[in-house]
Image (cartoon, rainbow, N blue to C red; front, side, top):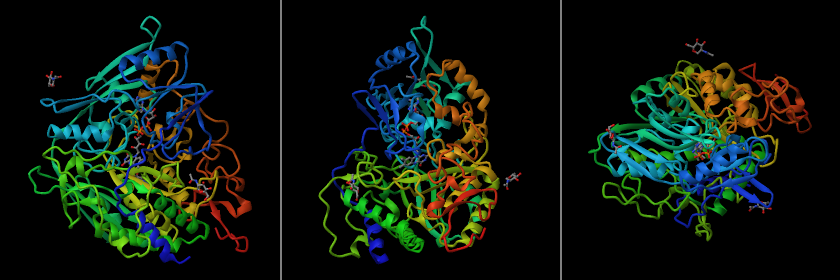
Length: 619
Ligand SMILES: Cc1cc2nc3c(=O)[nH]c(=O)nc-3n(C[C@H](O)[C@H](O)[C@H](O)COP(=O)(O)OP(=O)(O)OC[C@H]3O[C@@H](n4cnc5c(N)ncnc54)[C@H](O)[C@@H]3O)c2cc1C
Ligand SMILES: *[C@@H]1O[C@H](CO)[C@@H](O)[C@H](O)[C@H]1NC(C)=O
Ligand SMILES: *[C@@H]1O[C@H](CO)[C@@H](O)[C@H](O)[C@H]1NC(C)=O
Ligand SMILES: *[C@@H]1O[C@H](CO)[C@@H](O)[C@H](O)[C@H]1NC(C)=O
């Protein structure tokens, strides 16, 4: 197959279409004898289904408290799961196999804005997109959000999710929480459930800001808002030779900027993203293509292309495709539309809530039609990429899906997201450059998923928050659907992952990452105040009904036997699936040519490296 064909297929992924959307599948499925809960990719890291005895879909606080009280009474384990379960590791799994799942899918979506206090209060059923649109109706803005708007408000804060920038209180949503209402387990005398109302003056709020779901059920959350403003966004591709210097000055120069780095093609895409006055002209929106619904045939074709590159170990083609995608991001606006329907050039200026987060594939959401907000037209037709091809112009008949939808042969991927101190970021970039220089094509695969994203976060006040100003290093890459299956240049990815965690004392994102980075509570111990968090946990949930085997590992409360750092899950080939860090060849796959070797630059790393049987080990 010529690489040109693969180029075209990746092109297609970028092609806007306006079709009926297939809403993502519900994460909870129940059969005669119980239920299972999945993440949004439909596959847990360890490939072991997560089981529960039953699920409830309360619509009101009363219903929720009633169901929870029954569970507390029988000491049943429980967890809250949001509508779509966007967290990759098993935080939503209740302990054991017969816990209770409390879904917020049908829960009240009531919201209220206090205009004089400039706050918004939302019930646990509210999705991020609805929240920021509602605040906008009152001329108010939540300064920072995640880039994807398909998440639930309580799920986002529980996992410490964020955007990028050092302005204001920083880019994490939980920094803006001013009050919270929770349901926590209690005694029989109190009816088994106690409602806790926390405000800014309660120290317990700093435990509840980022709680990983282990403190109880968040019923309601209040955020501080800012008067509405606009953002001005430009994308610029530059050579990466000064990246290690730029990364520091860029943080100071831009309120919301980020950088996506393509090490193997030696370029970086700078998103210059700044606050501008609400009176600035511009009705721009961000309709990021990757989050739009895409016809199933196009998603599957792209996946087949990616699998082919993996199988044929063709990193060079991945680099060619990445370069084309990068250029296209700048030339077609990467989803930024100046007037809501077309891209005519940077900067794109628009209201904060229409520029910071985007989505589309998750529902039939259409942008608000309120007067101060622009209404985009439905269909995007032009695409420089698509117009190059001939013969495959047909619009496919089926619905559009999110590109990760597990019901089709979709994309499935790992995500590594680990934040390191601003004071170490330059050295880290130099280390990654050294790794790149040893194996120039080793990081090509990252470009297929948009490169390494660098995003800024400020020191947090949450107990499980980050204790310094950091840059979050976030990259996505191929994952096989088969358990413990290798990926092209996986050793390079593992070396960077271990370097971030071990050499640079990184802070992993709670909702992303492979299981091996959470070993032994190391991430939790690096937070502001794990001890205080655990004290609040013991007070709120003394019987540990909201805890599970997984959350205990993450919080350092449950050690598997042996040396967790190297043997998280003991099995053969465990390192290939991100379940352990190898120390013996059997943790890789020697029969297929994968051996446990030290990193090339970071020698303390232990990675699974492919070595052709004919070649002599060179490490
Ligand atoms: C396409 C995509 C893009 C993303 N982009 C970003 C990004 O830009 N920045 C970023 O930081 N993250 C990002 N993420 C990660 C995402 O923000 C997190 O996965 C999110 O925080 C989880 O949201 P969820 O609403 O699906 O919650 P779930 O995964 O369902 O829940 C997360 C945790 O919160 C707990 N929980 C949820 N609701 C409650 C409640 N009411 N009470 C108690 N506990 C609760 C659950 O038990 C679980 O432990 C992205 C994810 C995807 C899939
Ligand atoms: C709104 O906030 C103000 C200032 O904090 C407070 O005095 C007032 O009671 C609030 N209003 C409502 C309806 O809660
Ligand atoms: C995915 O592809 C395989 C093999 O190509 C096929 O057997 C299977 O039915 C496909 N699955 C879906 C959900 O389309
Ligand atoms: C990170 O920065 C701190 C503070 O400057 C320094 O002490 C430490 O050695 C650095 N770590 C690495 C791995 O460079």
